[in-house]
Image (cartoon, rainbow, N blue to C red; front, side, top):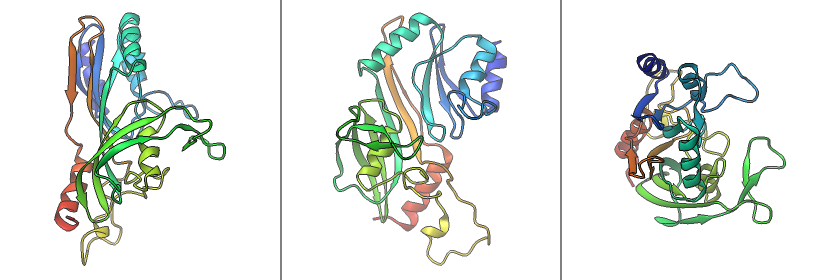
Length: 249
């Protein structure tokens, strides 16, 4: 069963980072759902792939379909309760890396802006100082370019689309984020002077440039502090390569 599950996950581009009797930590690729889509149940999703072999799995948290990186699942009800308690108590450290359009006004800071669902657009979150739920994100600029920045974000709360909306609210939407103003993706012609390529240029990145790079929590059974980190995926590495070459600020 273990070998078949590993094969099923690998066939979808998913890597097992850590696994024991209580939990699974996975490296999820972009464009794979964590849970079934409400409007299209036929779309592949990570929880269904795991349940097909294990029979039961508990979703502790989720990351957006387009976001790549670390996610943890619980394998028992007890582990689920223990991990949920940590997420709700803000004991879990989450680190995200993003490439944004523009440059934040400060090299580091805290965005404290309540969020709520948009009353006008389904599936969109907005800053709402009156009715929104508390949402706090710490950020730091890791690298600056002309027209772009490479940013680390550490969400202290877990609201839907939190990092995406918070960075948009500061005037620096995440590259490739169609929903929040980050454009359609990254094309080499946008940064390379005198670009001459194929007539139908393909984007080097065609999704929201957001990666769950770090995750740290206490093991729900042993109490040991576990910390995981992942390098950037190929598409985000490729973008940074060309930004360093043509847009170093």
